[in-house]
Length: 351
Image: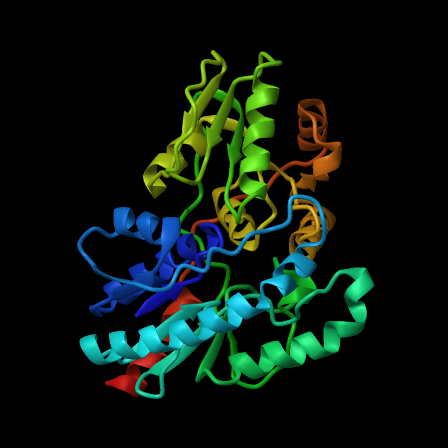
């Protein structure tokens, strides 16, 4: 059973190589989830079995600290934790599940199955004004993950780490399985788009970014692709240099990236892993107040891969200027060796 969190699409898309690896090992895979992320995986793997999990419906703030906004939704998170656990037990019994792979869904575990937590944030970062709570929050986080049998971190250990201090740890029982991506290296073709915007993440920030792109496209001659990351309705748009796409399959995203000079996206960790593999130039726009994305944008810039523009300073000129200052990601085909070893170890225990 593979169960990704439904805050945006990133947790679902990075589960795609995990699902592929399970299938390559002749495993029967049940995908459990909710919302647009479950729709995406249905489109990606139409022949598999799917089960519905509760929809979190978490919302970000339109302006203030995201940590504070999420804290106000703590009662909902506690309820979802309980509902996830109850739903998981039903699925485990129904399908005789032997292994659970939970991407950041803390309630998706069972004593009846070997339960694996997948997540890169070993060390959660709090906003500066809430830094005094960092130790407490991380103890709570570690306590929740400790209820799982394994913790798989989708990153490299050491100086090549894409997540930097977020994934750094010598904790026993933690395994680095390497960066995950549904993509391999993408060879650029004839340039159709100057900029390709890849949108995802919780509302209302996804929609605010989308509205900005549409307004900016009407004032430029740059050729722009907008991948919305949702199938929610959108009013008819007639802007000659703007091409709008909705919820796309992997092969369709690959085609657009191949035809684009620069990719612009939130600095979510899944997006960083994807672009690390695809290669090419990119510019990140961290979600305002989202401390993880702000840290990751700075870390990737320090590594020399890609720059970032803060949302309140966003302009097409700043994007183009930032992109020109970096050579881009080198591009690497997905290497599933570490993941394969970890999976073989798990399956050997359950055989």
